[in-house]
Image 1 (cartoon, rainbow, N blue to C red):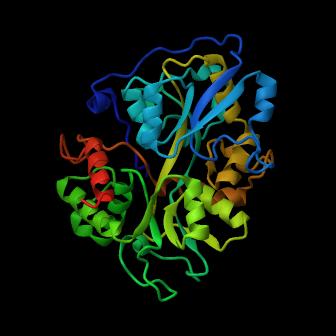
Image 2: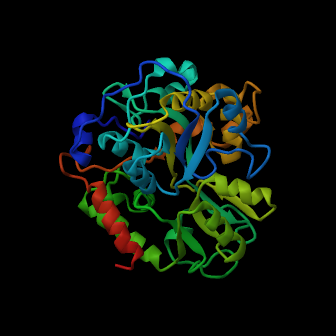
Image 3: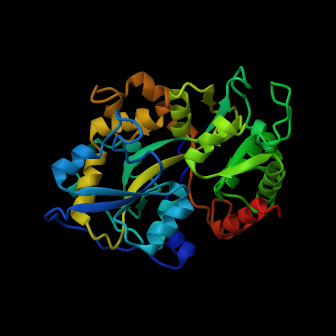
Length: 385
């Protein structure tokens, strides 16, 4: 079943004390000539990393809108940038999207102005991370799991458990994992620890890694404090993580398919897996700033992102899944039915997608630890407290 629940306006207001903005573009005008996007690494490519992957150049030529990109490495960084303003669009993950809605930083999307909306995966059209009280605040972009990336010279077989990054142990090469693993530099990593505990400490009765009572939350933090003794770096920059795997002796870490694919393309001994405990994941949405200065270019870009060719090539490039299912099979780009299956297209219901923790959860009003505590406490974990 889908692990995310629709958070209504009342719950959103608890996050920031604000209710969502209701302004909406009703018609498009002349393209403004440019737009600026806050995006995850690898999400908006113009052939500079690999000439085979370019979904910007033709858009700029056909629309007259020059695309400017500001890369962000964490959801918290994206929220901060959108709070500062000056951007038109953001590719927000589920642990940022509802915060942006609640904080009045993004505006409702008029899907009537996006002809290809009808092609979006039905599982995503009304997804909880961009839909509030029936109002859409974004256009689905892509989705996928957080994978365990590992060095195949050290692991002749794929690791069966996330324990290789959470608990001190000797790896198959006979050496300790201490100093050879990494962890994600973001408070949402607490959810990865909670998911691990779901399998290894069932007595905690965790049902969602994003809905943790005080006892469950403490157990997750304790696990992360132990992990602190193992990690060589808390990563947030995808390219620095890749360099660490190439040059700094890192052999295992939670990661994204993007890093895995690039390292493999360079001929390095890298692979990935989803261990037996399962995985958290992300379903990302293109959202429009409430004060976007280039709304027509923004809408033209959102329509462009749903083109089958872009979705097909993007899925191959990032090792993720398109938000337009036809991109897997219509031959418009590099994706095939087999590649989409390999990327987890059929595993949607098995992934626990990122979402923002709130205090009012399925365990009861005020029963769960809210996100602001996750932020402050994870800083403490990284700092050795």
